[in-house]
Length: 399
Image (cartoon, rainbow, N blue to C red):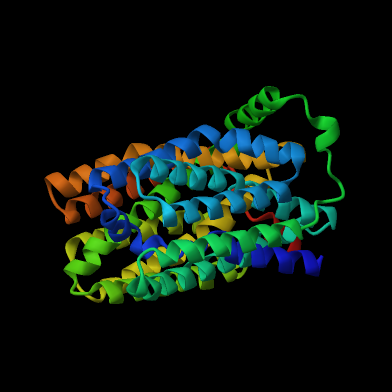
């Protein structure tokens, strides 16, 4: 088991270490793409992910989670290498599509593999802590990739894409070293792609606990995801240059890694549902202050948001994993959760961009604060009196 966890942590470190992110916009502009085309590529990425998220999760349930992870990393590697060599809009579209398909194969099967592997050893109660450590490795990999991307971009803006391709291929090799859980039921439970997806969708939207967890995850994800496009203009307005912004990005992702690693200890110290209240509260207040003040000390607020980022993923995945009734649909249900998150983001992101274009960056930041307050209020009003679904079962057992 220790060997499996080490391999899995190594995979998480490498799988999403996208070195090219800090130089993506200037690289594509230098290759002749307009800013409109760049944004259309982002829209394409989201569209492909939304369309294929659930089918690829179902295929991972059927044929094995480790093979989905290996294939996903290979595709992201190929997409990165194609970006490095691409010169026309058509090739960039193909490269972006490969990246998107690769991400759908990675998202969901990784956490499903971890939960079932722990359950096979009777250690699923420790899933949250293990997921926290794995998420910490992911954030460390992202931080190192972003820091390296800035320095490599000074040499050649295309070099980060080449390095990303090599790292992704290495991640695929690591994924092959994983071992599937011995209690696998895929061969006997599989009834076809469409029935399998339909069963997972019914589970996700008819089980009240799962539905609440998925909507809560979507709220926090959207507030964190949109920050990637708001941090850069904020930091520029606060007087930071491009190099400093790259280092700040690396630093805040290390803060997320630190929070992820200690998520189990944090959860144990916050009783009942208080931690679920705390996440949107921190995000809402930080957005409110960022909208009111543009200053170098705003970096502290970014650190607070990234600490939420580190805690939220293992916390919500633990909540979801506990209520998936059938192991053989686990990756598909997690893919449904990922699809819902991205659908909500696609609906909110243009509105946020409109606020920036028509009004100001501060208006968009205030808008995020309002969404945090209204979204959390609606979710928690939806909980019935005395509902204990947010209690920590591991804490109760230990007590």
